[in-house]
Image 1 (tube, rainbow, N blue to C red):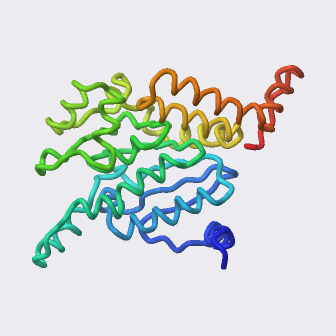
Image 2 (cartoon, rainbow, N blue to C red; image 1 turned 45 degrees about the horizontal axis):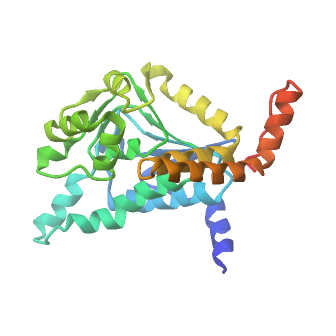
Length: 277
């Protein structure tokens, strides 16, 4: 079976997930972390299922993705119970191997998706769970939700992209405070600081996330992908390099069917009908 045929096969399979839920509404997909009794903490099995689900999004027809959690929490980070089993067995725990095998590929896969990714944070997002949310393009949070960089409580360094995203989103001083103090940051304060897009009433969170996903799914997907590429590159580029990247991405967008449709709709005074091409 060729790689492309394999990708099509995987994308079309009805997967029997045990730790996540996968759903599609039109061209909008939703992945729900589904270990509510453990606050949706990560296990090796969940990482494997997330990889399959993200591959399904990447190779299928989805044009927007929502990430959320089941129950009262979004994600409590690593399941320390699973980690303790390994430690009680006398095995030495090399956390860099866990990061290299599971967390780093997960964050990179989310960032590489060429479609808008929305995190709907329905409750506490702690440790790697907080940084899993911050890997999304748009983060909405219930007003009752909070974000905790809990690593320092265990003598660890923020991982899963935490040390990358925190100073870029909230600045050095606030990023350092969040990392070293490991105190909860309420959703409304997170929005005020620029850590997330906005906080919404708890009972409206998923409705707003779904509406936003459907809006993105009907939008100019190719353009969204290049907006992501440009903004993600900007922190490491000089102004000259960023201007050159903008010119190249704009060239690509200018040749798209969506650009032609956008111009035509504007001139004809009608809503555009984008195809994502």
